[in-house]
Length: 194
Image: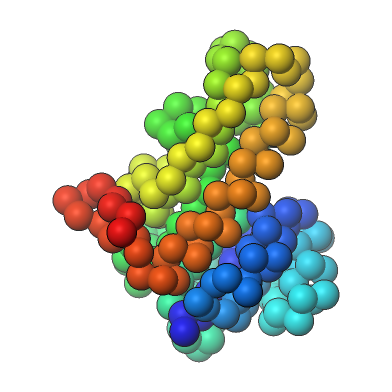
């Protein structure tokens, strides 16, 4: 059984979607780490009986992941860029959820509400969420899963965020389940789901 670490920075609603789905996941959420003491997701982890820590330093984070024998890392609203050493220690073993259809509205500086504000400003009619493996290029790793949603009727970034979050909460636990069942493989830089 794989040991998962979930990295968060905020309320932890994506984390909660995994916690709520854990009976279907062939793995254990062994650790939740936040880079912010005030992250609401820490209380969600505590309530679910999951070990949780606040770690800001990436060397300390990498050492902790190794000590905890973590096999797989999920970035669920983690607002920090992972360093090269950590990414190299977990090749194709770190996934991230991004609140747009990559390669649109992604890359450095494109996170959280910034994404939805850019989407609104550009006037796109469809947005969604993307789950991808983490590489050294920000939001540039192989795409695992995408789901689109119409936002043509919405007029605020907050409303777009709410609708996209519904998609995130649906697809993230599913991808974690598939990964833990060994059904996601990377061939020649692209993902195949078995």
